[in-house]
Structures are given as C-alpha cells and as structure tokens.
Amino acid sequence: MLRRRLLVAFDFDHTMVEENSDIVARKLIHVDLVPETVRKLYQTSGWTQYMAEIFKLLYNNKVKKETILDAMKKLTPTPNMLELLKWLKVEGHEMIIISDSNSVFIEEWLQKKNLQDFIKHVFTNPASFDENGLLTIRPYQDQDWCDMSTRNLCKGYILETYLKERQAEGASFDAIVYVGDGQNDLCPALKLSEHDFVFPRAGFQLENSLKDPTLGEKLAAKVYTWTSAEEIRNNLENLQ
Image (cartoon, rainbow, N blue to C red; front, side, top):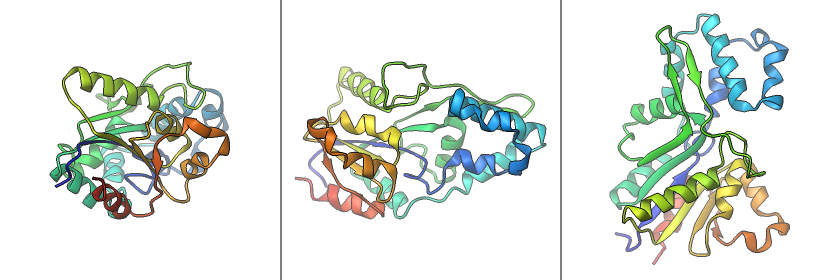
C-alpha cells in the first residue's frame, strides 16, 4: 500500500477515453446536415453553444436518446486506464473528473464500466434529456478571469475550489495528481506545487504546452508523459 494519500484529477476526452465524446455524438448525423451557421458557432459563441445546436440537429434528424447513450457506452478506454482507476480505488486515493464534455456522456460511460462509485465528483457542463428526448446542455460556469481557459470552464479554478472545500471538510492529501491531454488542462497543471505531479498524454497538446520555456517558475509540478496508464501507476507506486 502507498503511504501517501493522493487526489487524482482526470480529464475525460482523450485521457480516460480515446475519443472526443462530443465528436462521437456529432458523427451520429452526416456532416452535410450541419449548417455552416452552426459550424461557425464554436468560433463565435464557444464549443458548448455549438454542441447545444448539434444536439438539436440530432433530435430534429430523429437520432434517439438510446442511440446517443449507446455511443457513449462504447467509448474506448485509453490503454490500461481501467486498471489504473481500479488500483487507485483499492489504494484509497480520491479521484475527480474535470471535463469540458457533459454530465450525461461521462456518467453514462462510468456506469457502463461500473466506475460510478470510483469518482468522488464530476465537474463538467450540466446536461439532461428533456421529456421529448432532446439533449440539452448548459455551461458549467461563465468565467472571464482566465485567458488559458474557455469561458464556460476554468479547470484550474475548479481544482483550487475543490481542494479548499475538501480541506474545510477535514480531508488532507499528500500530493495532487493531474492527468490530461489538452490545452485547457494547462491552467490546472500550473496550479500545482513542487510536491505535485502532472501527467500529460504523449503526443497531445498539453505535452507541448508544458515544454514552453516561457512558463519558467509557473510550472512547479513534476511532469511525466504517458502513453499507457500503466506508466502513471508505475510512477505513483514509486512515491515514498
């Protein structure tokens, strides 16, 4: 057993699962059915508003709720990710997800993999199906203080706030671990201290962003890249 208790924060798309769950949903209709006005939305109004319109298109094109949920159940875990999650659970570490996907997609996948009790909290854009089967989504937040993050989700703020809340509840962690892949994972990575660890997925944007020499002392955490979650476990097992 590890002698240290960890808080491990995961991204979801391209980190826990191979795919981008939003793109998987979008592909349930032919790209030609997506008007140019909708395609441009994510540039002007943000990704969440874009996906809200995609969900309307799915509904209008008779894509059923069950079809969408089925696609989420089939999302592919990244190599050895399920084994890592089970190991972290057995070792007594706390796990959270901070993702720009949505609550329906993430919860459906977690339930399919019997992981819903492994994750202490999921921070993501709230979503639900209405009585007609239309999937609706709302931004998690509306922030204007972090240029590294999208307006609807600052992962660094979420991580810091969660830590303060857990400390107020009497929880303590010897180290924080952040596992991610994308540009929006940079902010939480820079919130970590020299006692903490960030695991960027090899070949993805976060790995490159963390190599930026201008970060300097902003990047305090130890950095370990990974292609298989087994590498994450091996590094954490070596902690003393």
